[in-house]
Amino acid sequence: MNARRALLVALALLVRPVPLAALEDDERQPLHIEADAVELDERQAQSLYVGNVDVRQGSMRILADEVLVHHRPDRRPSKIVAVGNPARYSQRVEGEPNEVRGRAQRMEYDAERDEIAFIDQAVLTQGQDSFSSDRIVYHRASARVRAGASAQGRERVKIVIHPEPAPGDR
Image 1: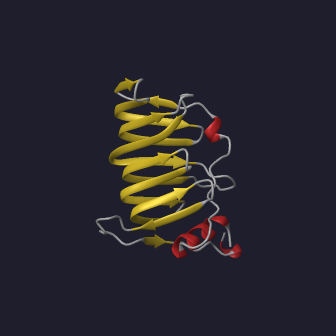
Image 2: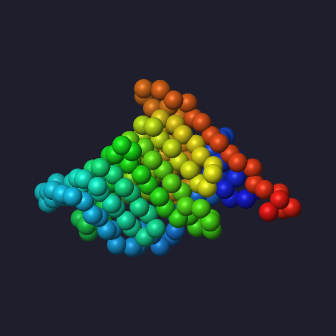
């Protein structure tokens, strides 16, 4: 079973770790942010970016209408909250040909936990395979994904797994 299929089977079962590790070098890269406007608050150690926001760090990219970044004392982000209609995320994955793509009305990245939460109309895809839910949480360090209905309970988890072509079908 290849890594992509193993990932999606694990997501379906939601019981075992999945091989979805971002490129190791990404978090050591500089953070690049572009927006139509910015408001910096040194006292609160946060910055708010508004309008066509484009956040990049290594192979990771977030596109959103608005992004709030909470900064650590060393200026690295401790938390990033992206809001959009939808906000979009993409990142290359170690050893995989297809990058992981996500979208949701709200995304929250917690650097301390190394966790990304996709909230409200969340969809996560890799290649042709996908799953959707009200809430999807991806813990990068342990390579675990949890998905399920939010407090509103509007949507069940939905998963689409495409079979790999047989060796003779390629």
